[in-house]
Structures are given as structure tokens and as C-alpha cells.
Length: 437
Image (cartoon, rainbow, N blue to C red; front, side, top):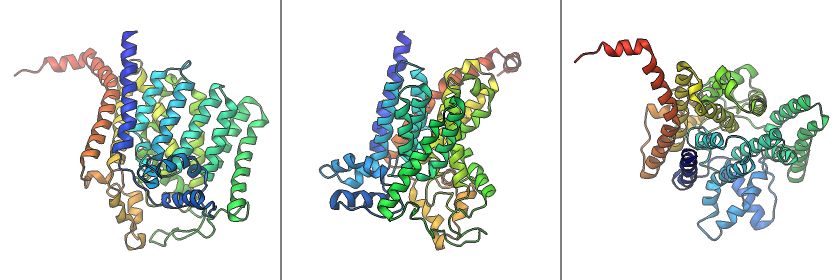
């Protein structure tokens, strides 16, 4: 009991201090589309006018209370850049409270520690993007739906998350169909219908028509790539899937390495909520299906696959499952767990300290060389620090050290299990006994 209490205090302390570290030390700033979203909500707050921009107002409206603080303390821009840390903190607290009397809270705490300091989410907390709110709402909704607790509230959260980023409609439809087939209830099919209706209603109110998305004629620049410069969903589907999954600069394999653990039998054997895990993976698959055909599948000038931040959640869950009981896994299974944790830790650290000015290379000369940032390891935002490590100020140095501390804490049980296995191995004992000064 005393040991369990100490673990709770340590992990709770790491989470609380961690949120403070992310809020204070993470290099926050508005980037790219953030400026349009911020302008949209400021126009609504100060002038009572609705913009006709292509981006949903859901996330900006959620941020209004925080932006109003900026009218009297610091600036609205400063609070907007910190908004996603607040979103994740609030949803994390809600999830812990909702599940406090069921399930393994220690497992949930480990999931949160991985998400915050050893996942792609770490980088996405730096700005005012809409994907983080969608990811947290959908994840919370799936937890509520699959635990049978406040299921209506869960579906509502999913609908709001989808309206916030309409491309997620296909992913939500797959989840709803799966749940309808499992429960043999047609009512779950109302979820994507409701989301589509709200998306069209916003488009009608703001842009004059239910099917007016604001993306008409939108296209990229013409480069050496054969399919560049074309609009809409013109990219070859197969190439899109391969790029989203395996490219060095945007591939989920590299930015969410925990996803591969689902294919290991040990993960599926240990996971306590297989249906929840399946729905999360189905949602990720839906995102891949819709974005694979879009000309801007790579997410523009950004650090990593920004449209797929939701995938960091199941990736963290699978890794946390294997960290929970390393003694039940074999040597090579634990070695795989440690490898994935190290890679995930690198994603978190490099995303936290990334010097975003280095991304300017990707858009020089009318983005003629931008594809190098998607496909090659040397210019991948994830691996480029190995070529040219960014200079660290004291804030980013402390942040990187905290990420390393959390990863070391999480890795300790696995390292211990590996060491015990090696010590018990007869070949290891024989090899060690043969050494002399």
C-alpha cells in the first residue's frame, strides 16, 4: 500500500510539474493557419462579425475564455499559443476523474506521461492548431462510449471534434459503423449524419452554401514532383498511403512508433480494452483514407504529420500497456518495448526543442525542394537535428532534460526486466565468467 501510494505521488508529481514545464518552457508561437483562426475569433469577439474563412470556428470559440484573459494579462496571442496545453490538461483531468473508480489509474498516468513527453503531441502543444482539440475530444468520447459511462456525452464530444476538423468525418463514420455492427443498433449512424449536418450548417452561415468549404481551387505549387500543383483530392491514393505511413519526414511509422506495437502479440494480450483500442485504430485509418488523396497530405509547412496527432494517443496506449507488466514479456519483447520508448522519446524531445526557422529551407525558391523535407532523412524535421543540432537556450535545455527524466522513469522497469533475464541466462553467465584482468 505504501509503495503504491509513493508511485501515485511520484507519477502525479511528474504530471503536475510536467504541465507547468510545458506551459512555461515549451517555445510557443502562432504558425501558419493559426493566424487565420486567431483573426477569425478576434473579429468575432471585437466586431461581432463572422469571417468566411475555410477553418471551423469550433476551436477558436472554445478558446474565447482564454483569449479574454489576454485582454488584461499579457496578450491574446500569447494565450492562444498556450491554449492547447490548457486543453490537454483539462481533458486529462476529466479522464482521470471519470475513470477513478474503474480501470488502472497508474496505466492511465503512464499513458499521459508518454503523450506529454514522448510522443508527437509534445510538438503540437506549441501552437494554436485545431487538431489537438479534435484529438482530445474524440479520445475522451471514445473512452466514454466504450466504458458505457455517459455514452451520449461521448458521442457529442466526437461530433464536436469532427465539426472542428471536418476531414475527420470519414474517420468518425467508420467508428460509428463499427459500433452499430457491434451493438446491432442503427442509431449510431446518426453520429456522422449529425456531424455532417453541423459542418454544412456552419458552411451555409459563414460562406453562403452548405457545400462551400472554402477550399475550391486550392492547390500547391508546381515542382519536380509529377502530381504537384493539382487541386483537391488529386494525389494518387497508393502514393498517399505510402507517404503517410512510411516517409521519413511525415511517416506515422517514425513519428508514432508505438503504433507498430499493436502487431506484437504481447500488446494485444496485455491490453485491457481491446474494443477501445480497435476504435482508435479505426479512427486513425479513417484519417489516412481521407488525407491520402488530398494534394496537401503532408500538412504544409509543419513539424511532422500534423493532421494525424490523434494517432499519438493509441501509440502511447500501446507503449504504456507493455511498460505496465514487463515481467510478463520475454527478452526480445522487452527489447522491442525499450526501442520504441527510446524512439518515442526522441520524437518528444526533438519536437519540443525544434527550431522551426530551419523549416524555411522547405519553402525556398517557391518550394522547389520541399519534397526533400517529406521524404529524405537528412531534411526530415525529425532527423535533421542529427545533421544540425538546434542551439538550446536554458528553457529548451530544461525541457529536454525533463523529457529525458520522464522517459528514464518509464524505462526503468523494462531495463530491470532485461537485466534480470540476462543475469539468469546460462550463456550470459558463462560469457561473463570467462573474463580476466
